[in-house]
Amino acid sequence: MLTAFESDKGKVRAHNEDAGGVFLNTAASTCLVLVADGMGGHQAGDVASRMTVEGLEHAWQSAEFSTSEEAKNWLIQTIEEVNEHLLQYSKSHDECKGMGTTIVSAICTEEYVVVAHIGDSRCYIKNQYDFKQITSDHSLVNELVRSGQISAEDAENHPRKNVLMRALGTEEGVIVDVKTLTWEEGDLILLCSDGLTNKVSDEDMHEILASNLSLHEQAAQLTAMANEGGGEDNITVAVVQHQGRERGSE
Image 1 (spheres, rainbow, N blue to C red):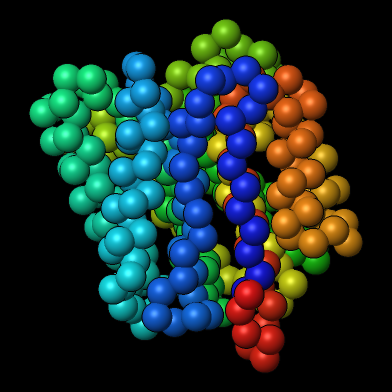
Image 2 (cartoon, rainbow, N blue to C red; image 1 turned 180 degrees about the vertical axis):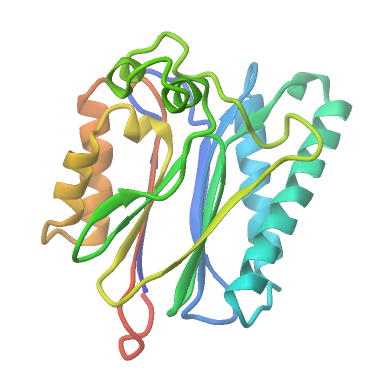
């Protein structure tokens, strides 16, 4: 697999509350991809997103599974454990009370991808036929769109666009949405925070990802486009491309 990761604080925020990365475990052809967008007063958002990524990365080093169902169960269980850890930490640290984070994660193997998410950070897949969003935002405006109360166009500039209906670290018994996909050589997975999707359209993302740029250049170009659009939020982009069995990993 080929991978690229980029995280930028944008042009307005004083610091970056996003965290993430692409992590290999003992199977070099298997990777864990993470993007977390923290929220909370002071710098608590930094703490929530960083702790989430560190918790998942640590567990990943010893993760073992042989089927997509086992990978799915591992991802759900580990995210639930991280949720509990965040809750306990915020209860014992006054400066972190109310902190939380989104999480979008993907286990990528040669045969399948398991995607899990909470919040409005997203996952997309690009193959030779299509480019589509895999996740569904856990946000107020998305619920309003789904229920027919507002249109998708209205949602773009809705004043409560950033209100989340679900986040990691904010309550007990978090619900994790999980999907399992098959993919083939040349297919590409994009994970990103809303600092990208609020500024760059799906059409523009598809155009960049379908270009002949390297993955690192694509990630940099997407980040630059979000900053050119105003860069009011932190921007995090992770890209993974299936390279087939014979080529190994990069």
